Length: 464
Ligand code: PLP
Image (cartoon, rainbow, N blue to C red; front, side):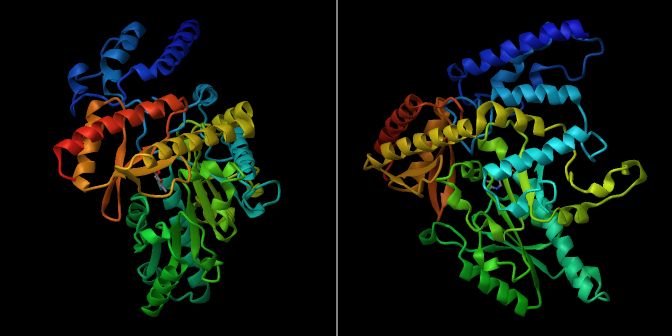
């Protein structure tokens, strides 16, 4: 493909994308295919002779679309949102064209510098404490990761490194393996499964902090304090807590690394009315959320800040000759994750929406969630299972888990809307997450009508 053809095909592709997104609600949100469907639709091997571009484009509808779950359909209410906006898509095109890898400042100065400055912009939108802002003299700052799971792991590895170094500083004779085998990390029993996996990868003990429904599943400081004391008494070394909530308990007196993971909720903190959810962030060592979930910056863009850049740089530092450059000592720009020019997406989105546009977007989703909550509350057959704070509504039919499981199966088999469940204190709960940028009130009402119609059928068939 030469430049002339690329110009033509590029314009066609933009049209194809615009048509796809403009008409997405006419597609079945959840695909009706069996595992392995795709293999039979394409050859076993890559073509020896080139295919034509037209052939490839034709195969998008024949091969790809039948197996696509349309995450950007206004009928998609599963998991959590994944961001999708035109400015971010355009920036991604440019990133692909520049195609640099920003593993050091010298590898592409604009790439590392824009990332640091965009993380400052976003940190300021969130009103993060000054400690997390790089500026021109700060010790902290932000770096983009691929996912929240990666950020949890990166923080855990940095915390492990810091803990080992601190102990060795006071007891240099102690063997390092004797330290790591005693390290213990903590996370809520409600935490995302990525936390357990991070513990496995880092080779450290990971303990779950029990939570209660009556405390809205938030980790209680007293429970954590007791666990830490018991573990210390048993000769273990508590060194890391990962939580969705901030903990004044850990005012760093314990020298435990506190990592706050607000993967979904984090985007909402740009609105002053939701910012109190982040109170206490000043006690944390690191903080992360997925701008690619709810802030209109397409995947991947998981934004992570640390109070001390040296904690990250120190933990992952490699110094081969080919990475050395003349400005190394400035240390202001750091990358723990090699990737394309992801900060371009942030730059485009922040400028084209403005803080106000982003706040409006978050507020609209929260309002739609409240609207859905009101519909659920107005129907005596249903109950709300957890406080509706942002854009997620957890609800269920009053009755058995079986009745709710059957209801969800019917909903998803119908393929008109798509939801996933969760388990809250042993109860099977349906999650209704506001996901698509284009969801409107009429979609919510339509979804509710469908849910109640199917509920009626299920309740007639099953004892509840
Ligand atoms: N942590 C929390 C609190 C989450 O809600 C999620 C996903 O929704 C994750 C981690 C995992 O995110 P990722 O897929 O970016 O690793």
